[in-house]
Length: 130
Image 1: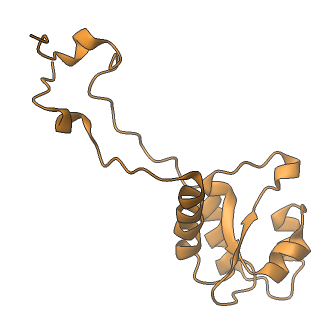
Image 2: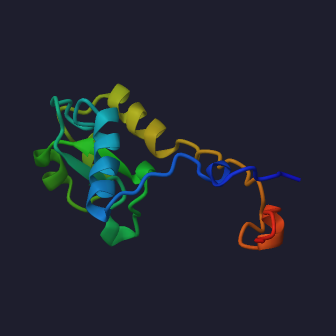
């Protein structure tokens, strides 16, 4: 069993973020992966497009968000991305493959927990208070 030597043993890369800061960091992390609009290739996209529109059941998860210029995002609206994209003069099989790779990426493996009953004081093997 895992023995806790100090409270630092229980801290794993903990960052305190306000909701607004967390949202900005999340958005920036996706836009950093898309230096060009996923659809037309314009440099420095400024919006995140929901590949499957939220109104059609798409989520806010990373796999459903891609960097897009405002024009493409607005024009696509809530249409299925592949139908809309294949009808555009700027369609390329390379960009379509990139979008497919993005939306089909596997979920990151979550690290296995050190202790599954971490809320139980006995599971932490902490010394008794004197």
